[in-house]
Length: 119
Image (cartoon, rainbow, N blue to C red; front, top):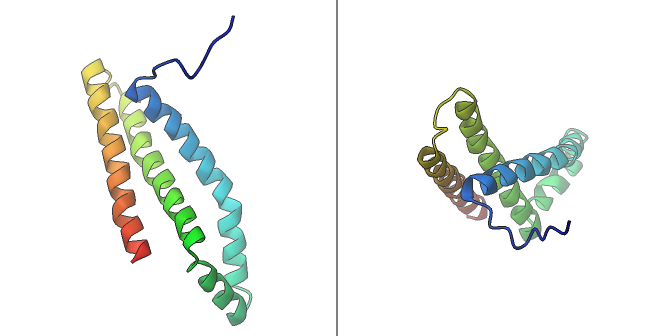
C-alpha cells in the first residue's frame, strides 16, 4: 500500500510529538561537539581563545540558536508528556491547548535567549 506522508495533515499534538523526537536527536548529536569544545578549552589558553573566537562566528551562533530551540522544545514537551503520563490534560481540547503552549513557550524562550546571544 502506497502511503504519501506529505498528504497527511498531522494535528498539532502529533507535530509536537514529532518535534520532541527531532529535538532529542539533535541534542544527542550535539553532545560530542560540546565535549570536544570543552576538551579544547581545558588544554591551554591559546586553545581556549580559539574556541571562544569560534563561538563568535555567525554560523556557530545559528547552530547554537537551533540547539537552544531543541533544548527548550524538548524540555517543555517532556513536561507535557510527563503530565499526560500522570493523566493530566489527556482530553482533546486540553491536549491541543498544551501543544500550543509548548510551541509558544519554546519559541519565546528561543527568541529571548537567541536575541541575547546575537546581541
